[in-house]
Every structure is written in structure tokens, then in C-alpha cells.
Image (cartoon, rainbow, N blue to C red; front, side):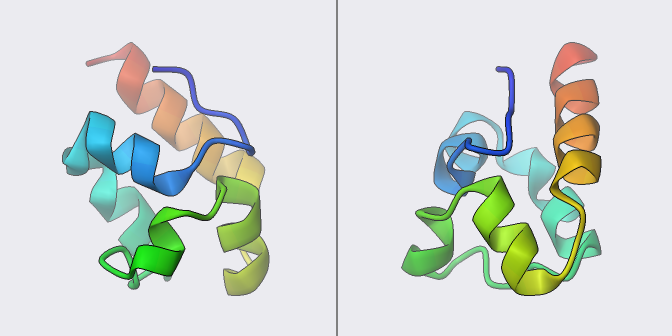
Amino acid sequence: MTVTKDTIIGEILDEDFDVAPYFLEMGMHCLGCPASRGETIEEACAVHGTDPNELVAQLNAYFENK
């Protein structure tokens, strides 16, 4: 899987829920909420005041090494 800022969080979690800690570390503790699963990485990072590029890089590194 390749993640971009436009990738939907629910799609990422459906692909591999083991990435949940990456979201939790950035303060995104609402992963079980239906609304959060429908957000893009960019939208969620804007709400939580975090850098979407950093999260995208971490997630892509995870999936490349999987």
C-alpha cells in the first residue's frame, strides 16, 4: 500500500491495523470513531495540528518494510 495525504484513514487501518500506533503517537486517539475513519490523513492532521507529511512518510516506510 502507498499512502498519500489524500488516503482515507479507514482504508489504511483496514489494510493493516498494526499501524494504529502511528496515529496514536500523533494524538489521534479517535480511531474507533466512524467520522475519523472517513477522514484523509491531511484532514486528520489539520484537526490535530500535526504534519501530514511526517505521518505519510512513517506509514509508507512501514508498508515498504512489511
